[in-house]
Length: 244
Image 1 (cartoon, rainbow, N blue to C red):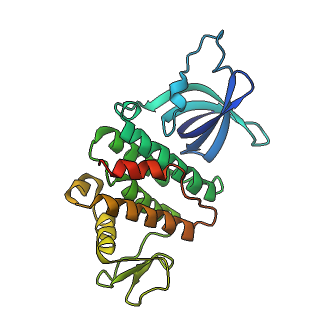
Image 2: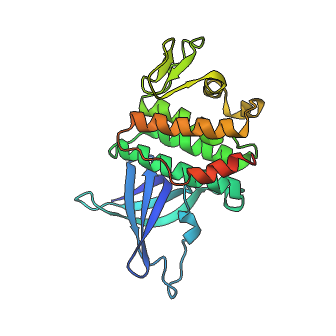
Image 3: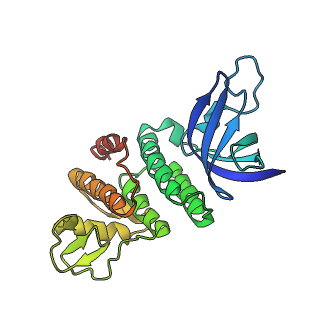
């Protein structure tokens, strides 16, 4: 039986001479891997473009799953939403590479559970990224918002407290021994959490502050997700912050 599936592409691996294995985060089945036969064949006429499988591309497809629930097969792949600017904007592509690493790791933590709310959130924010040019705080904001779905959203109820304890995930009046944010960075952390995407341009951060907060966000994920590793593309994002 075929299923109509919506997915966010997280990566591909070449299989043999002409085929791909595609990792997708799907709305219906969570994290899944699918075989796509013949895409790389020079002889075969192809209705499906290789560009459909760039990182974080939004696709819709027919899939046939094996009875033993192993590798499925992609059929009739179409773009769910075609990006206008992301494929041609180096800044946005850098953000996409970074987020691909982050999203792939957090959905692995879900052990293939379905989470339509998380899928819809990621989809909505990718479309926002595609349509907007002011993206300097986008990676930070989306990382912090993703914690809501993962169960460790920062508790900033006590906003007057001088410290944010990364390990506890909350504000603190007592200085933690390690892993905390204070001073201007703490204020910016709170502001970013409380600001909608469309209003992020109202926040003014220095370049080194953006980089420092991104580092804190990665540390926060490491403290709360056992298998989380710092994204390799973080240095590219830090370069992005220098010009955004």
